[in-house]
Image 1: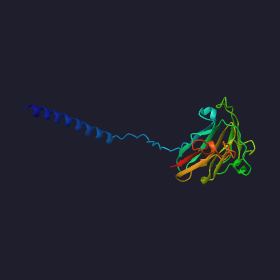
Image 2 (image 1 turned 90 degrees about the vertical axis):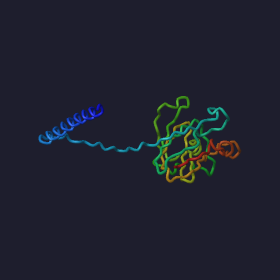
Image 3 (image 1 turned 45 degrees about the vertical axis):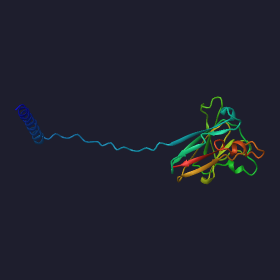
Length: 206
């Protein structure tokens, strides 16, 4: 009996609520109120520019040996994407060998290469940027960032911030190489030049 009474009370209360709701709805229908305009926000996707920074550290900075190295030496970038890379270079110039002068010319990039002179003691100081398409092969090049399979070659100025832009293209793994021989053997291709993680590395496009 107790259960029945509580159930009956619930029905009565429920009926009152339903009745009140119906009356309120009819009253609102008889006296319509002007509805406020509905503004629907449309989300717009804005692509964030992709910007990577590489550092060419000297052997002294690395503290392990006398070979300079790109840090990092392995990059992973999305396919078919425009990417800007800044190379912060603490190393000096190395003259390009005869026959390799072509590596002083930027190829495969979008627009010119921007070069900012850098004080190694104050690498974060702002300096004016100079737009270039080629550098002096005798004393204007320190290293290069060259991906032969993608037709990309960028000469890197000594003690500078060198910035360039390119499009990654289709997925795959590509090897990059510095083409300014600054290695330990008589031809300049030993040591850092032939060692992965120093003047050689990989670009993985996914």
